Image (tube, rainbow, N blue to C red):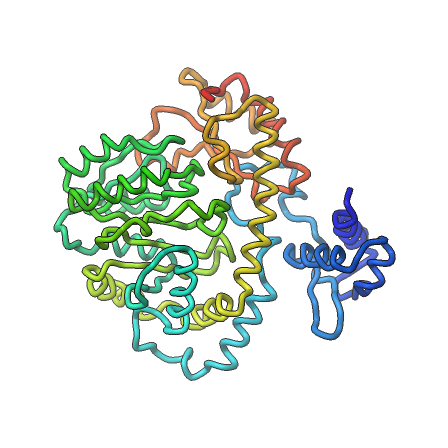
Length: 447
């Protein structure tokens, strides 16, 4: 164990044992460096890691204090091994920093935030901040094309309802895909077509035939970290999809909800390849900051903006202005970049633990190295008795996601999706081995 790890483990142990309680001040960095026989940088990095786990907090010119006395999560207290929870790890939420931004927003922008905002596209401060953020993410656009919604679900609803310049009505979706998109199409009785997606992507010939023969209004896709598969399109596939959309007068709705965790900076969004305003780019911050942050960022083609805005105003006059201002401050201050880097580092460690354990157990599909995700999907054998699998998992106190809701129609095959983002890193190998021991005889290993 390194000194860095030892400091983190020792402080956690003292809190768990009650030797340190909420509000207690930790020893100074110099004292800790002397105690552990390491340099002050090592101590600072260890304390920073604890801060991002919301275990401690710092006061300027005062010191470092214990934020919470109980650092055991609900999932750790439970006997259930929960692979089905895909929510962000709440222990990593940036409560203190975002609270500071909320306080500053209210203190400095009172007259601006407690009345109606005349620009329904969104608060100017946030549009300016998002313009810089998107540019960094290689989504090149004009500020006039950026619109703020109350979450991405609102944007998807509006896009499904408004007429498009191509005068088409059918929405094409990947299968499997984001379950709320499936539910939206069914609930609103919207005509749709589907195309199968796996770790190789979609069949581009089939995609072209659908574009060519069906009245496809837009193609909803999650090019990177696809939900639920966690897979990516290649650069060539993305270029071809954009080219086909232009050729057959189809729009693309690109949901880039997990882009902040992409470690491959050469993996560009679909929007990057679009030179004819065919791609509608959607981005949320609920997975990287916290789920209750209902702010969606939309980059729209000029021909759709006014129709989109007219529909949005009927749903809600303004997306919450205080939250918009707080997010603008959070982005501009550098807090977001700092949080993103730390969170990505923690999730990468969990993903590596998951991938290494699966490799050790003989699961090494050839797309494994193209992504570093905390999710993995097992495809079960065609003749598997799914109810027997469910019974065995319940007996072993293991919870998984069978992905049924990720299909708009009852799937012909059976899948199990697991996610370890809410699991402590030290438990991942043990829990995955227990899961695999339970389902191994029912799983297809295609490589």
